[in-house]
Amino acid sequence: MSVTVCYDVASVPRRDPNDIAQWKSELEVIDTVTVQPRDAACFEVPAGYGFRIKSINGPQVGDLNLWNKNDLSERFFSGKTRQLHATHVTTGDRLWSNMPALRAMATITHDTLNWYGFDEDGGGVHDVIGTRCDPYTNYLLKQVDYHHCCHSNLTRAVAEHLSQSLKDAELLIHDVLNVFMCTGFTRDTHQYFMKASPVRPGDYIEFMAEIDLLGALSACPGGDCGSTHSDDKTPCYPLVVDILKPADSYLDEFQASPLNGYDGSHGV
Image 1 (cartoon, rainbow, N blue to C red):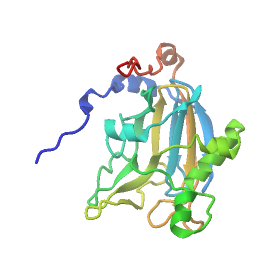
Image 2: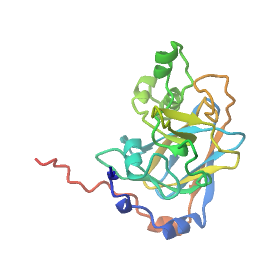
Image 3: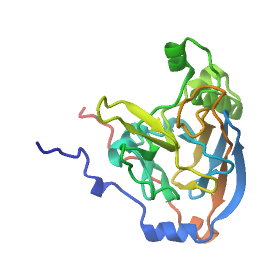
Image 4: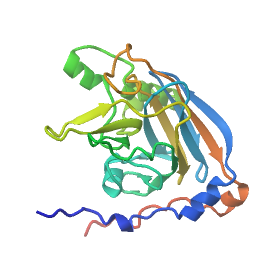
């Protein structure tokens, strides 16, 4: 029986590789944010600028949330990103926002792990199929309170950055891009699995901001996620986020990603 891919991926709007090359030609690191192990940190990226998430001391995965800095109701939509690209993303793919905006928030401009592809178990890197480790599921399965799950890490970071209560900040946390994480589905039971990430110090994934962004990144308590997560036993390492500025001449011509063109009438 034949299958039909739901969306014509050839028609998904992408940035011209020549435009990306021009953007990359004069990138300058203007700020650096360090994300401590089992913790999270926020960062801001103006439209047309970029950010680079780097492994520095050891194999470590991260959970990334993105928002429109000027309207926090617009946020990264992992499900639509998965449908428009694939279960795992890499160079040239884009991170899309939720409806009604439904537009590109960021474009992946470089990925040092794009060589990995998919392994013999069906595992790939940088997934948009998982959610984020969280204290609620952890309690459901283990009956233990653990406060350094990525959901809690992101909540604390956003609350501090926005000067909000934990209760209000938690409502902003959403499904993530699992940066550097190696995941897939088992062939027999079709369950979500993780395996040791191939990431090593010096590896990075780089993005162009298509709109003004607020980002939050958690250094997952699972470390390389090769065995367990949601505990304080697994070796964990910091991650670094470099904020990147392209040439002024590029910024002068840059146009932010437009809102989705649908008229919003819903047939009424």
